[in-house]
Length: 497
Ligand SMILES: [Mn+2]
Image (cartoon, rainbow, N blue to C red; front, top):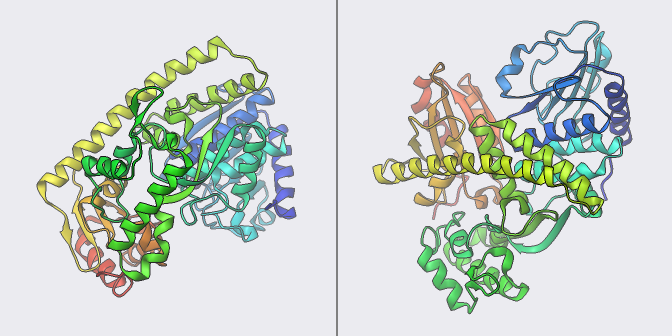
């Protein structure tokens, strides 16, 4: 089991003292599932030590640009899932105290704290040779602080964060410090690990044949075709109705035997469609570990870590982070009470109200996505270049253009990345560019996050992200040049036939 390096552990002890000795605290966290989970963990810690939200501390979920000139006016300012790459201490004075818990590439050195005259404590796994994209994320770092206080019941949030951040993307399971956090969550009885699972999105809430029809890492006959997906299940002799509640079966209902039958068939189908060089990666597209939150009801999004993370993202992308935070806060309390074998009617009913609100946001979100995807499909607007494909996402909100690019991938050629662009905001006419691609391309060694960073930086913009999901910001008039450069940069890196 991976443990925290001793020097990093020392920083955690210091972080605990910093929090315990501060009366007035401000938290800034990032606008995504990882950031929300980080914020919920920090809130959880502070409440458990008797601090009141709104009185002793405040939390704000922000975009990175806010940090360019962030005021430092509280006794202690905490940055989670962001801060390492931004000039967050620009406005600090000698009485300031700053704590950063971030897994993104750091701007400042490990001993930067010795060069300033205020309390500056940065905890970043990269300082210790730990991979911040696979071994621990912002939420994981915040959980390790909770553990320093003894609050191991917050471990499940570290798992939600890691899945939201796709830390399991490369191997299909959580590894490194994430694995240690997972062990804590399992020991607490809060998370179940399902080994060798069928790794299709929607294992609790989507009928299995629908989940199958969304498979898009490779274009199969079942991709975008629910009838064929249903036929596939019937052909394999898999019962498509759940005999207990007479609904369509979901992935979580599959017996081990049926699961293996389906996985085997999918691997065969994929292998027939892909160049032989990719064949060894086929199993990873359909098999992996799943994580269930044990206290949540079956067939709800709350039960599955991946589906739960989507709901968190729907909140932040619709500028309702407070709904996500409220749900996590109530879930922390609910878990505390359940661990005493009790049930609180108040918490259940408060949570039901938040869940209704969240359902409304998610529904509107899904509608917005579907509407735009349909429009792109009907307008036949995907432009093919030799090594990439793109579409103009004009009118699409810049914070969902990536999600939409990912969903449009199944309408294009899975062998090439799908890129979309749209105006950053009404006030800013720069372009936000988003790229999504099949996991196969990343398994084959292409890291689009690094490529898009290189290209956008050479244009004077900026960019980066994961291997299969990344983005960039460039000026409007650089669009053609950007696509030309990306296309050239990818020459020879993809297997095109
Ligand atoms: Mn993160």
